[in-house]
Image 1 (cartoon, one colour):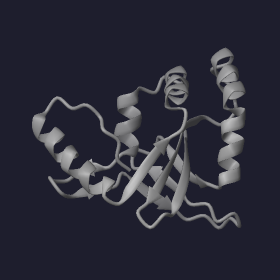
Image 2 (image 1 turned 90 degrees about the vertical axis):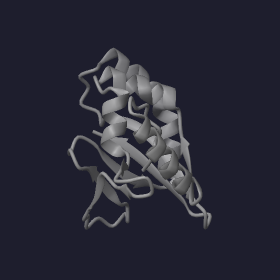
Image 3 (image 1 turned 60 degrees about the horizontal axis):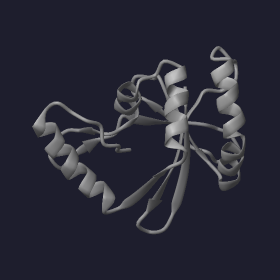
Length: 145
């Protein structure tokens, strides 16, 4: 996964630009309610830098990317795929269209609840995004901690 994160080093910016160009040739990313999820992450004390550094690809060179996620083996019947970050702080789950619609529908109430009760025992939903591959396949994800 690749998101553009500001860097102080110009060589990293160049590598990320080349990597982004390669990713964009094959995929299109959609982030749903990014400002709401940014606020939710803030409530949980998760900085944008930490979140993005944890889930995004690392550049191993100008044209090579290394994933920071590993797939977890799940025996469930749902067919969902689970990924965990290498620092084990966050995990991503593939979701269906109906699960995404449910997530979008309860997001306003979820945000208000998290804002009022930051120590809630509810799942910590941190991002919802989708990827559309060049072949037209659309994969939806939710990021959690």
